[in-house]
Amino acid sequence: MGFKEKLGKYYTDSYLKKYGDRITQTQGNVVSVKVEKKSILWVFHKLTVTLLVRPERSRNIVRCIYKKNKWFKKPEFINMSQGNFVIVQGLKGKKGKSARESIEVINVRNMTTKKDLVPMEGKIQKTRKVQRMK
Image (cartoon, one colour):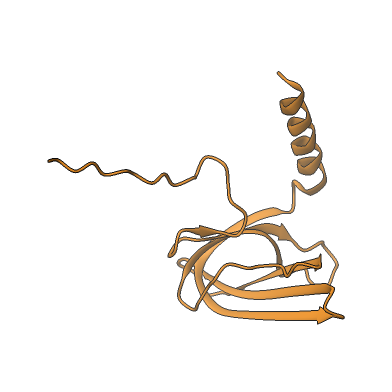
């Protein structure tokens, strides 16, 4: 095991130790998307996205919140519209807090358009070269 693998394993273990019981995933259709962008002095940019997702074969609705703050560059979010099928990975709210019912988004995969918020390893789609017969 090389240095990179040891370091990666250490980070994964510590992350799972800290957030292991809160990690969750939900998949379903998007009911609503609300994107709020705010710029402070053209230097500091805030992005807040609120997703309402209706899980498969369920009547309830899950509220997912994505927050990103960045200096100088504007943070980006993937295009999403009502009715798209998504997989949301994130953290449940802490017990006893007001945001206990919502999910703090880590990654979103739009299965309708096959796009990721954060690209995942091993799922890179390869383009094929087609050879013509002469």
